[in-house]
Structures are given as C-alpha cells and as structure tokens.
Amino acid sequence: MLLRNRAAVALGLRLCSTHVTKGPVVEASSDMSEFRKVFSKAKHIAIITGAGVSAESGVPTFRGAGGNWRKWQTQDLATPEAFSRNPSRVWEFYHYRRELALSKKPNAAHLAIAECEARLRKQGRSVVVITQTIDDLHRQAGSKHVLKIHGSLMETRCVSCGHVTTNRRSPICASLKGKGSPDLETADAQIPVDKLPRCQESDCRGLLRPNVVFFGETLDSHVLTKVEKELDTCDLCLVVGTSSIVYPAAMFGPQVASRGVPVAEFNTVTTPKTEYFTYHFHGPCGTTLPLALARHETEII
Ligand SMILES: [Zn+2]
Image (cartoon, rainbow, N blue to C red; front, side, top):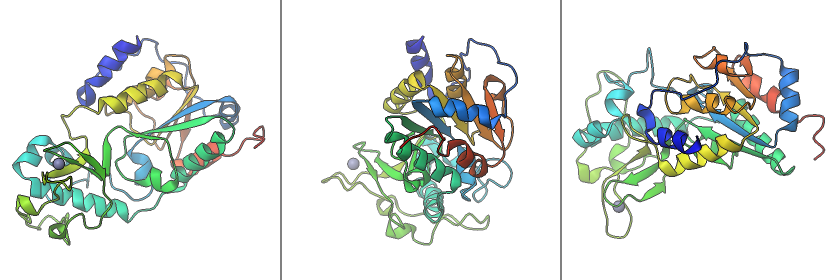
C-alpha cells in the first residue's frame, strides 16, 4: 500500500486521483475543545500548509482573478519551456516574487506553528511542516522541520551542474535591479543570458534557475519520500490554508484520514476534501491556529 502510494506520488503534479479507499466520514466537527483533547495526546503532528497561510502575510498567490503578472498567468511563465525560450522574462517574474516575499513578515499562523514545534520538542513530541508555499516565511518564523514540496524562491539550481544553493540576495544579480514590474505596459528587460544569475561553483558558470517546481515537472523524490514517512507515522494532521486542489498535496490529508488518524482543516472556505476530515475550523488561520496550537493545560514543560 505504502509503495503503491509512493509510486503514485512520484508522478508529481500531474497526478489526478486520490487513491483514498475509505469513504467520507461524517460531517467535519468544529468543536475546538474536542480537537484540543486530541492535540494534547498527539506525539507526532504533521502540518500541511498552502498558499492561504502566505496570503495572510500579503504574499500573492498569482492564481485566479487579478493574479496576472503583465499579460501572463503563472502557468504561462512557470514552465520549463518558458524558461528555456525566455529565461530573462521568467527571471524577471521570479525576481519580482523574491523581492515581494523578502518584504513580507510571518503572521500569527506561522508563529503559532513555529512556537508549537519548539515547545513540543522539549516534551519529546514532534511537529513537521509540509508546505506547498515557496516563500521563506515558515523559516523566518522559526520552524526547523520544514519539507518544501514545491521548492523555494530563495534557492537556485544550476541547469548545468544541478547544484542547489540558498540565495536571499536582493537583487539576486545586478542586471535584475529595478526590473520585474508586474504592470501590463512594462516591456521585457531582455537581459542577455550571460547577465542572468550564474552558477558560482568553481568554473561552472552555468545558468541558474529558481529551485521551484514548474508546471509539468515532477516533485523532488527525496522530499516526497520524507513526506510519505511523515504521513505514515503522524498521529494528528492539520491541513492549513490549502485549497486541496493541486495534486499530489491534495491527497496528503485524505491519505492520513484513511488510516483513521484525526485530520483537522483550517481554512476560510470548505474544500473538496473537507468531507474526509474529522475537524474543520472556519476563518483566517492567523486567528484559528494560535488557539488550536496554544499550550494545553496538560503540558508540564
Ligand atoms: Zn553549476
């Protein structure tokens, strides 16, 4: 079962079936005191986060109405084809997103997750964040155990040697300074490829790309193997600020629920997966999560 799931997950973003064998449970409860009892006994908590958590810090999702950059949508720019055809334009887009993300601060939801992880660690309990977000806000908040399934805006990968490195420089290179405006009238900067971010490894000098998963690409199998292990061993799962539409992340919560483990959804809306979950807490996660993850009266440290 596990191996089959792992093979399915390895198919990446193009996956479109949940492989959940157990049907929907009864309607999700919004009883916080019941959730708190379960929380107080959990030893290993997996917290799956999505764009909603970042949106509450003001990081745009570039999805849906008003989600365009110039005349393009993310799906037009975040592809391997777009990057090989016009790396300057794609770098302008990601430069804009990096600068925007660097200007934002973690919100109450990020902070509650990080504080909970640090507190529970002292009690021999663990919290892992499995995130679809590509900004740096979980790390900034202090979370230590974070699995980034869609990569990171603050990492680059060399297209020649494959070297991945953390890079929070602003701007990432001199030629992108002041570029990347999202305004419709802005012309492409048409930066020569040798002036775009280049690999610093010895004499490589290969072109760098953002270390994010583009549309049509598979997810990093090393990260997914770790995710599978966490989903298989957690005894409580939170699904926070994710629309549960993009696969394979959309199946993570239902996969845990199919083992009979409690899953709690925190969102401003119900989602296509709400019916699989034990709990649903409605509202901004910056409001609901601090209550849910606060110190429980039974915690002695
Ligand atoms: Zn290189």
